[in-house]
Length: 283
Ligand code: HEC
Ligand code: HEC
Image (cartoon, rainbow, N blue to C red; front, side, top):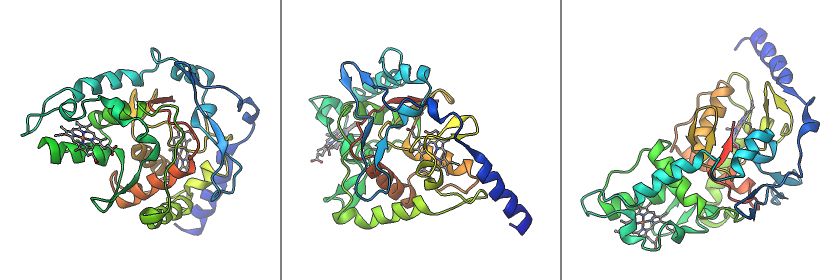
């Protein structure tokens, strides 16, 4: 970039944010689903310089919020139903479905979403939800792994996430994942792309402010997978990261890359204390 375009980009960056409509955010709005009240605001984890972590739901328009408050209105629940069928479908060389082994149903996984990603001691690797699903498919079913950030995988992640709805995120950041977490933290604060911005410029320094027609949240991941009205499907965490990087005209990392895996852990830990909301609804 030459000097002229660089200064033009900086001016454009400053003009990106407006605080005018900030007052419209009702921080005290209550998200209650099916009789369970979600924790949408919690004291921030010690490693953060902000006081409070806040769910992305708080920043959405009232109509969008309402969709998530009723499972019959939440379009994400349609995909949960699709995943229930998938759960019972026999596939692979072993002639098994998920239900053949996980006889307690998806309910067996209550609590799992809240602690992922986490270190898998047996495999010597950090596991996301997608890793667990594909591990079972490949090693126990003799089936092909599901492609990441595609409808079947996103739906299965939604079904399993739903079992932890309401439970506070509680991702470990120490021990064997400490280095991965540190890599995620560094990525979060590194400016990239033509707009020369880091995740933190929008989601830490400007949450509550408007960016063009959209109101910025803290970019939390507790609501994933997210049903977006914009593309009328479920969206995975890493697909969202990709979208944000494209928006700042950066070359996004690949879904499943070490970079996005590290970022997924780090972003999840920034939301420790917030309820699992997946599948949530966003614009
Ligand atoms: C042949 C048996 C078998 C089948 C079929 C199977 N799994 Fe598993 N699954 C297991 C075993 C065994 C574990 C390991 C439990 C452990 O980690 O101790 C496991 C672990 C998991 C875990 C991690 C659970 C945890 O708490 O750590 C998830 C999630 C999971 N399976 C999802 C699925 C899904 C989704 C399907 C269908 C696509 C499936 N599994 C099919 C046997 C199976
Ligand atoms: C130019 C500003 C900008 C930057 C930089 C940016 N994002 Fe975003 N991001 C947005 C906007 C706008 C949205 C949609 C509104 C909202 O939830 O903040 C969003 C949404 C998200 C969400 C969904 C939150 C929810 O509750 O649905 C996540 C997660 C996220 N961003 C993560 C990231 C990460 C990680 C980075 C860095 C790789 C990043 N963003 C960089 C603007 C940005």
